[in-house]
Image 1 (cartoon, helix red, strand yellow):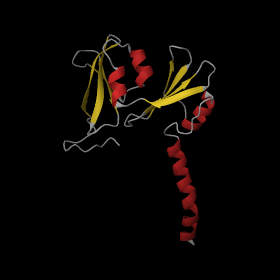
Image 2: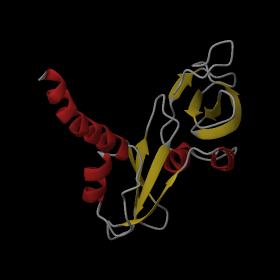
Image 3: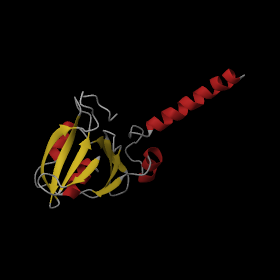
Length: 167
């Protein structure tokens, strides 16, 4: 009898697990949907950023140990115009240029996995986890509200043997 109950519950549990996974990324988000529809699918955003051309960018950071941040752009009418996963190596290096203001960095990359005061140049060090070969994270020195410099570094979530413990 117990085996029968477990067998009948298994499809329900599997469905719930898949439903939870589907909300991780914006795969179900479609152009023209409202912010409320996006929130119903992905949950409340971890940040909201004004776009220079008007509209709003909704941030869905999947950290602090996650390696993905999804940005869903809304037009001035409040409807989805597109989305992207921004924590990619080319995008990290392109966005974190010296002199970039922190509000621009937040709009383009989202909130970092970690913020640490007292970087080697003063200010803060913002660290972003992302999918990379090896066990790296991207670190940005922020001084006076602007990017000072940026580079890759070893993610401390990894052990000395190079095993990635951050997933």
